[in-house]
Image 1: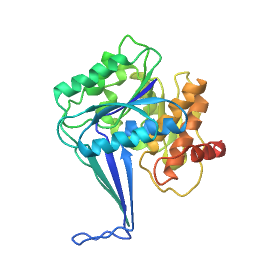
Image 2: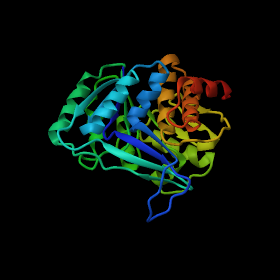
Image 3: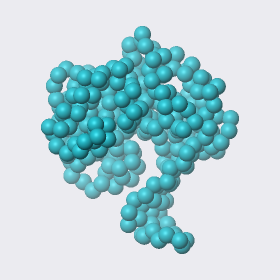
Length: 301
């Protein structure tokens, strides 16, 4: 079983405007709603690839109801903890002459409720995969991912960490199966500008030295590179289409890689499927569907 963890899921409210003018009432020309959260995005793409997963995390209030109902409608299994107080956050994504975002803070998570989540990880068994994705809410300690991983020690569980800076670095000593920084995140981690393949490889190999087993570096329109634990470097091709949406593209790549590896155990195939998923979401108004994913997959070299 693949488990995805989203500590702070959301409803993403996307508004389209011809132009945004500060200080006046602006009228939308289109609106969309999506279930948000990096782990949930991974589960959604896995479902498109006929891979079963269980979504873990916290929900609260009427927005939490909408998140859980939306996940069920997609045929995804969930095992969320319902928080006593607050509501699951609403994130506003405004697309006008420029793109802007306003992300909600999310509800308070008590120590008791966090302990309930920790207990759920005891159901994760040998051969399972867990995806720890996204930021950690302010109401829980920033070592939460580490505590979850430490609780899994002694079990043969593939751990995937898709987080930034300290959250990611603190997990490396536990030898995660996969991490997926982009060049900007590598630049932030190593406090240096990473702009070419030589610099990318140098930084990725440092992360491997610190414990990561496989490192995918997404390069946006230039594709992606996988530095794999078999000692080989794999490259994905690119497809040129109009980019409609960047939200969830990285999560889609993670899902595609996991699915590809689950099906074949082949790193090259897994990267190609991951790249197809990431590109397909970028070329779609929301997360990609199965048809678009395999259309892009066939075009990738």
